[in-house]
Amino acid sequence: MRNGIGRRMRFIGVVALGGMALPVAGYSYGVEVPENGTVAYGRGGAFVARASDASAVAHNMAGILGLNGWQLVVNANVGASSNCFQRAGTYNGSADVPIEGTGTRFPNDRLTGLPSYAGRAYPEVCSNTAVALAAQVLASYRVNRWLAFGFGLTTPSTPGSGQVFNDSVRLPDGTEAPTPVRSMLFQKDLLVAYLPIGVAIAPHPRVRLGLTFEPGFARFQFGVMANAAYSSPQSPDTDLLIRLNASGFFLGGAASTQILASRFLSFGAQFRYHAPVSASGTAATTANYYAANAANQAPGTFSIDEMRVHLPWTLRAGARFALPRAGRPTQDDGSGRYDPMSDDLFDVEANFTYEATSLLGTTAISNSGNITVGAGSTVPAPAKIALNSNLGDVMGVRVGGDFNILPGRLALRAGFSYETQGINANQAVVHIPAYGGASIHAGLSYRWRWLTVSLGVGTFFFTPVSATSATGAVVTPGDTAGAQINPANCTTSQGQGACTINRGDFHGNLTNGSLGFAFRF
Image 1 (cartoon, rainbow, N blue to C red):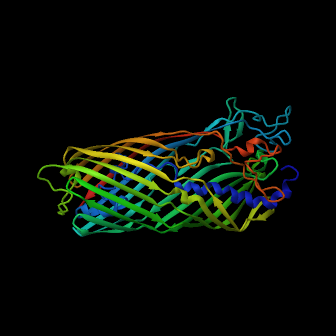
Image 2 (image 1 turned 120 degrees about the horizontal axis):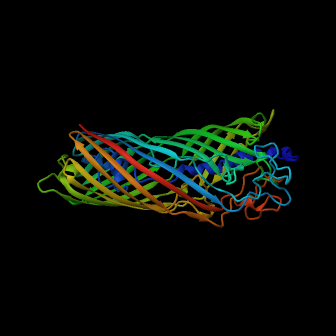
């Protein structure tokens, strides 16, 4: 480390906790894939007013009153995604304090005195392809036309929960350089699971109500690089890697309804709310991360006593039209024998969705312990810090339907979805690939006696984000007064690149499918 860095190490706790400001917003998962459950997925997510298998336990508990006897569904959405960023500008420091690579895996050139990548354009970097599995195991039991129960396990329908960028890149001429996204959150792994337990009742033959208790579990694993030098924060020789691992339980629930206006028309709605997650765990730090000799790295840990994350509530509502087959049971007859795959010629549903992702804007973290900054040297981790993110609420539409080619045997389906953008372009970051865009879906179901096998596929068209005026600063320990770098007023000693780490173009891609098995007893 350069002279003067040691004097600033007392501020390094700000680095650690400042770096955590990025991961918290990742709880929005990234790209939301409509919707978990293979039948719902094939319909583009239009599955609030329809209830044709036990996945209704997650989408609309009230709808399970239309399912006969015991039913069980096992679904899995499988996706492969990648998120890319082309950072604007070049690897630079400043005229006063150039980039320093001495002692790192990116050593200074003997002639220029700078690392060989200095002054080169940033390359486009993409996260390693991540395969995500969103699973459901749900069951329902209809006691009679007035009462039914549902329970099981479900996970969020998203491939955005896992994302890893390499910590270094190769430039076109083979030169190795630090990754351009190292000062943003470049490693992310989320695990979230819900255990819905609910009841459905019918106070009126045409009105069904559902109430769900939904405890959950969340695990957050993140990696971000901060820098220990306030005056020269773009040099890899003072980078500090922070890996956060925290987990916790939370409570939630949902209220839902299904209204059977006629044998042709039905309406459905669900409001879902979760209390904040209270997570705890350990933050692992590695000072001098890019050291050429790994023995010169300084690992350490401190405790995350509580990370309190406020979760968004969601609202979904939809209308469904079904054309019954002559002489067959209908959705409003109360017999419990109605089965959309056997008794309808076709159906079409349209949904509206709203997610209050802006609630993720404030997060509180409490800590204890010390941060290791060198061999035998530690500083206290800051006791408390409040973090802010900048997300907007997300709205979407889903339209889809089924056509029963062979009633009770073979059904084909298709759907469409559209979602608004959830991130602010000028504060975009790689760990939240919440692009706006549309998707088209298709699927089929084949039934053999008590078993129905379903398949679904989807193609996504995301709108790229151009962050031409973005201002995001490298996280540093602060100056002698404890102030962080101000993106609106970068000094010449820091270099303009220290305050534009997220300026550039973002885009992503996704391949996704779904497989499900439904059992009727």
